[in-house]
Image 1 (cartoon, rainbow, N blue to C red):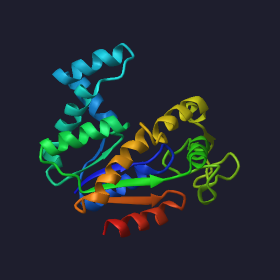
Image 2 (cartoon, one colour; image 1 turned 180 degrees about the horizontal axis):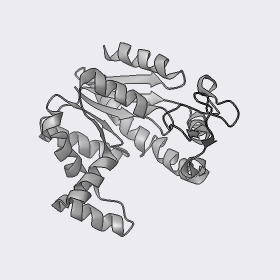
Image 3 (cartoon, rainbow, N blue to C red; image 1 turned 135 degrees about the vertical axis):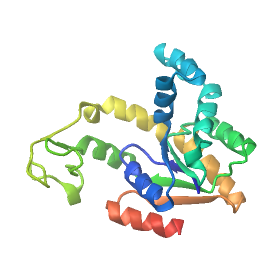
Length: 225
């Protein structure tokens, strides 16, 4: 099963991606981790990417896509993969589609988590970290996991907020890229949606990201079959 997963920051995409990973026993591949791995290992393509990153420039697709394709062809991807965080633009979607076809790696499923932009922003800014366990779910904007004042709803520990979760400009910048339906990330998702509408071999699945995690999971598992 070869899967592309789209969803805005704050949608719970990471949680649902982990569930898909376990269901199909495939690696959950995050594009940023591919960069970090190649740079840390000092691969030739990693060295080229680092030159751009060190200058503060975007790594061109001519480097990014071969790097991602190489990861998708690794031994642990023999039974499939779930790619998260790429493509981020329509242009990248076209190039990735071409590269996958050339490598005879046909996509099976594209998943899009749908969530209102303001709700996604609130979820990011509402996240709170427990001093005892960061995995304790606490979010001041989600009723099901709303903390007890400034105390963890699970253990009563003190809560704090990550500074980057409170940076509205940074959140808006990421969301500007994601919600752009002309050239951004949603445009790349819709590129594959158009292919799925013409080609029955590619399945395009949409998920409502508003309900609770178990409810979203139930919808996801039901649609994947």
